[in-house]
Structure formats: C-alpha cells, structure tokens
Image (cartoon, rainbow over all chains, first blue to last red; front, side, top):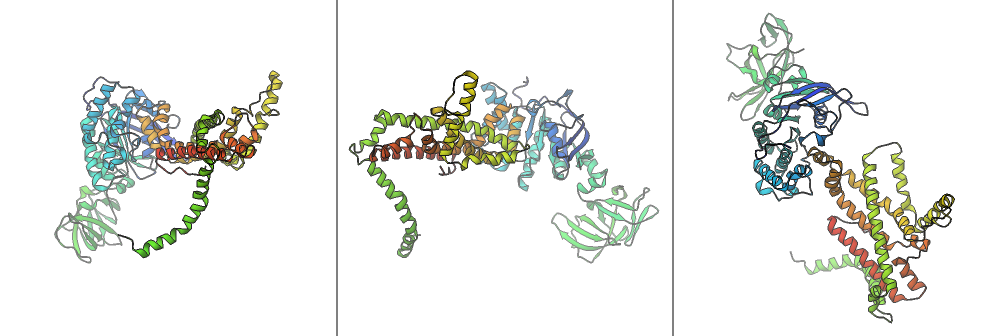
Amino acid sequence: MDNNSGNPAKLNTVGIRLNACGKTFPDGTRALEPVQLEINPGETVVLLGPSGCGKTTMLRIIAGLEQPDAGGQVFFGEQDVTPLPIEQRHVGMVFQSYALFPNMSVAENIAYGLKVRGMAEVEKKQRVVEMLSMMHLESFAERRIDQLSGGQRQRVALARALAVRPRVLLLDEPLTALDAKLRESLRAEIDRLLRSLKITAVYVTHDQSEAMALGDRIAVMEKGRIAQIGSPREIYYRPATRFVADFIGSMNRVQGMVDGESLQLPSGLLRVGPRVSNEVLFRPEDVRIVSNGEAQLQAKIVSAFFLGDHTRLILDVGNEQTITAETVDRREFKPGDIVPIAVDSEAILFLE
Amino acid sequence: MKPTHRESLRHIVLLLPALTIFSAFWLLPMARLVSVGASGEMGVSAYWAVITDPRYFSSLVSTIVLSATVTFATIIISGITGMFLQRNHFFGRRFLLATLTFPLAFPGVVVGFMVILLVGRQGVVGSVTEWLFGEKLVLAYSMAGLFLGYLYFSIPRVILTIMAAAEKLDGALEEAARSLGASPWQVVRDVMIPGLKPALISSGAICFATSMGAFGTAFTLATKINVLPITIYSEFTNYANFSLAAALSIVLGLITWLALALARSMAGSTVAAAA
C-alpha cells in the first residue's frame, strides 16, 4: 500500500483536478454547472456557500459518491479517477453525522479501513495506536461509540479517515453538528492536522469563519457555480461579486451623487478616490469615528449595540440609507447622537 | 416516600379490574392447563412423554426444524427483498407493496388450499411436470408443502418490518465504509446487517413463533408429518387424551415463549407478541 509505515505524517498526497464537472439529477435539477477546479497537492480548499449551492455535490463528485455528467472528469494527480467508485479512490472522508459504526468500538472503527484492506494484524494494531495518540484518544480505545461526546466522535472519525493514509481528505461540514465552543477547539485541531500532515483536503462548510480559518483557498459557491476562488484575504478584501461580498462578513452599500472624487450624501462627502461610481461598498470595521476636522460624513446614530469587545452602530447617512459601523471606541454611544465618520478610500469597493 | 394506608388501598382498587381480567383469562386457564396436563393416568410424567414417546418427540422435532428452516429462509428472502424495495423506486412499486400485504389477509386454510392448487395432486406444477417428464411432481403433502405454505404467510410480515428498519439506516455509514475501501459485500456484512440486526431478530422470532403455532395450513394439507398443533388437536379430538394435549400445549407454549424472550434480550428492544 505504501512504504512509509511508522510515520503517520507521511502521506502520498496528490492534487485534484476537476474538468468540466457538472451534475444534473434525474429529476432535471442542475446541482452543479460544469466546473473547473485545480487543487494543489497539500492544499486545503474550502467550498463555501449557502445550502443548495452545489458544494456538497462537488465534494461527492470528488469522493466518487456521485458521477459527474457526461464529459466531466476527475483527476487525482495524473490519474483519471472518474470511472472509479469511492472504494477504489483511496480517499478519507469525514461526515457531518460522524458516521461511526455503532457496532464497533473506537479502536475497531479506526481499524476498519485497514481491516478491509487486509493489513497484517501487527501492523494494524500499531497504526491504530498511532492514530489514537495523534487524536488524543488513547484512553477511549475500547469505548463504545455511544459513550463518546460529539467532539470525541468527530476525532474518532478523523482518525478513522486518516488511518488508511488517504491520498486526499474530504470533510463534509464536520463541525456543523457540534456546539459553538467545541466547534472552535476542534477547528483548531483540524487546522493543526491539515498543516502537519500536509494532506490535500477539501472542506465543505456554510460557516465563513471556518472557511477563513482553515482554507488556503476558499471557493465561494452560488447556484452551482464557483463565484470566486482565492485566498481568504482576497475573498474578504477583494470580493469579485456582490454575492461574495454579502456572503463573507457584512458589507455596507451606499448610493449617492458622484461629485469629483467623492460621493455626495446628505450627511457629507464620502471620498472614494479616482475611480468613482454612484454606488460603493465598504466593511463595517473600515468605518472610522474621527474628529470633526477629519470627518467625511456626519452620521446620526440609529441604534448602538455594546458587544463587549466592540460596539456596533447603525448609522443614518441620509437618503434613508443606513450603514453598520464597528468600533472599539469605549465611548457610550446614544441613539440620536451625531458622530463624525470617515472611510479610507483603499477600503472602498466597487462592484457591478 | 412510604405510601399511606389510604394510598395503598386506592392502588389495590385501581388495579382490581386488571387483576380480575388477568386471573380470568390468563392465570386460571393456565393453571388449569398445567393441572390437566398432570391429571391423566400418566400424571406429571405426561410432560416427560413429549420426549420419551417417539411419536410426540418426532412431532416436536419436526415442528421445530420446520419453523427454524422457514424462519431462516424467510429472513434471507425478505431481507434482500425488503432492502431492495426500500432502496429502489420503479414503476409499479406502490402496487407491488400493496399486494405484498395481501397474503396476510388469508387464513391458514386458504394458504394450504393454495399450496395444494400449486403443487398438489391436481396442481399446476404436477400437470406441467407430467406433460414434460411423464411424472407428476407432488410436494404439497410432504415437508416441502408445509415449508412453502409457511413461507408464503411469513414473508410479507418480515418484508414490512425490514423495510421499516431499512428506512432508518444511516446512508452515511455505508458511504463511510465504502470510502474506507469496503467492497459492496463488506458493506452488507459490516454495516447493513448489523444495522438491521434488531429488526431481523425480532421479525425472525415472530416468524418462528407463528410457524410453531400454525394450524390451518398444516390441517388443510393433512400431511404425513404431524406438526405439534396437529398432534395436540388429534390427541383431544380423536383420543380424548386431554392430559397429554394439555402437556403438549404447555411445551409448545414454552418453546415459543422462550424464542420470543431470547429475541427480546438479544435485540434489546421490544419484540411484539403479535404472533
């Protein structure tokens, strides 16, 4: 199977290439438009989007659980795996529902992939011990699955998927079923794993913070298409479409009259730079509360939410347009007050 | 908290109807059956006769063997069919499902009659084999006939139970097994059968219990092999041997009850006593 036994960190990981992979279901619904995607060896790509955007379908095509429409091809490295069913693709898969075998112990679950591959007993035992220690599950080896917490179950699922040293790791919303606190700690653990194993991973989620934290690149998906693919920074700071801008973080949208390099609003002049448009977008955290001298706009506070580490303000900038601003200013803001604000022109986006 | 006098009095009053019915329809007949079983010329040894008398013993053994074989065959046929019907949607599926429950509506006499029509002396199979090979194939009055008849009324019940259980199987488990490299057969062995195990055990137990007690089909076929219910019937009608009939009844009941109890503890869930 492989010749680097003894070190779980060494994997024969490969890149993934999707060639015109579309998916139309028998009832005629188009789950995925023919899509092109190249994932480098060792890279983590997050498929991010709302439900029904086609992200799970794409993952299942990569896994071999769904066949792409005619003409679509899936490559693992140089190998065309399109005709291979999942059991011959040598992938590791982690499911939202954990999908652990209830009739087997933790150790038996982890050993399952090795067992069906006919690995020798001694080697199998050793590998299971390695995986248990890698996932900090040593004391749970003989437990039944229903004696584990959700977080422990997902760690067993990860150990089981990685035990066979898959060529790629596929994760389908692995943290969605967990509560918020556990989600964060397991996210850190998955991050550690992906970095240390340098395994090619495809991670499906609808949670943008998960995507930002884990992805080398994020593919934001909308209606069966990849709306944008790029690093978390690119996606966040340079969204390619309105959908991406709205889906990742929150975005303010302001319309006004173009006046030279500024946008004219009843509350003042918003400086937008040489490229002008009558509509601009900017993030709440890019709104700065400034002294009157620097002010571009005099905005009226509609509501103020003190959230501890920052305050979120809903501001009226005139023409019945409100924007959201986030500030770490410790001042107590009151609805009705006027605050002088400015937005740096580098933070301003234009999208059709 | 210790119940007061008033409370325990109220409990007794409230339990009275249930106790009355239990005594009238369970405790008294059962006690009577047990005592009748021991009241004949043979006394308590009537129970022993089930094993010592070759006639009764062979009846007992053939009934158990028949029921066990039927159960085994039913589980295999219905397990595969039930899984298939649950997983595949094709034209006419709903109609097929509706007709599947049809045999449940037949009394044993009709099932026996149908077996005779199929493989009896004037049966379809007999005519065809006579025309083909010049010799009639007659199975109805042997163990094979009983087997067919019992299979006929057992399959629908089990299929329906399997289908209900198959619906609740987690598809992700099968996908997980496949992702780990399991072949379709390994998925069946390691995921599907363990997932269906409670349903297989409980429906198998009911199938066994029903077969042990089936009377109509066996009576209609009037086979050379006497199954236990037929033996009991002929003991008290033909020979007026009430005590032995009662003893055989108790033994039959005990074996059936034991099978159900065993299944209940193995399946870990309630096995309906609907047999």
